[in-house]
View 1 (cartoon, rainbow, N blue to C red):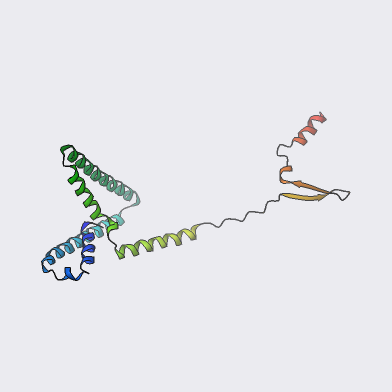
View 2 (cartoon, one colour; view 1 turned 180 degrees about the vertical axis):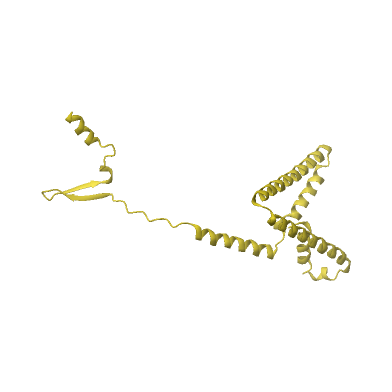
Amino acid sequence: MGFFNNMKHIKDKALENEKIQNMEQLQVVFDAIDDQAEREDEKKLKEKEYYESLTPEQKIEYNRIKKRNKNLKRLGMYGLTAAGMATGVGIPVMMAANIGTILSDDSLTYDEEKHQEKLKKSQNRRSNSSSQTPTKKQKKPREYFTIDYDSNGFPEVSTLVDFDPYLLDFRYEELIKD
C-alpha cells in the first residue's frame, strides 16, 4: 500500500468518531485523500498487470531493479540524515524520515482485500505442496539379532554387530592355506 491508502484507512477509522463526522471543513481534505488513494490503486493495478505480462527472466530483472531503486532511496535518506546531523539539524530530518516510514508502512492499516488474497495464496501453496510431496517408502524393520539352531539343536544367536564387513575370518583362512 501507499501513503494515501494508509491515510484513507486512518480517515475511515477516524470517521467512526461522531465529533469528526460533523466537521464540514475536513471534507475537502478527505476528498483529496480518497482521490490520491484511488490513483495509487490504479497505479498498483497497472504495475501488477505489467508485471504479469513479463516473462520469468524479465520478472527477475524487474524485481532486481525495483529492489535496487528501493535501496537507493534508503541510502539517500541516510545521506540526508547524516548531512542534517553534520549541519546541526539532524533531529528534525530523522523525525521526518521516521514519520514518512511509519505512515507508508503497510502494517499501519489493515486492508481486508489484500489479507484475503494473501490467505488464498497461502492455502493454495499448502494444498499444492502437500499433493506434490512423494510418499516415503516404509523402511523394512532391521533385524538386530537372529536365532539359528546348530545340528545338536543348540541355539546360535547372531547379532547385527556380529557381521564382519572386512571378511577377516575368510582372509585368515586364505592366508593359512597358502
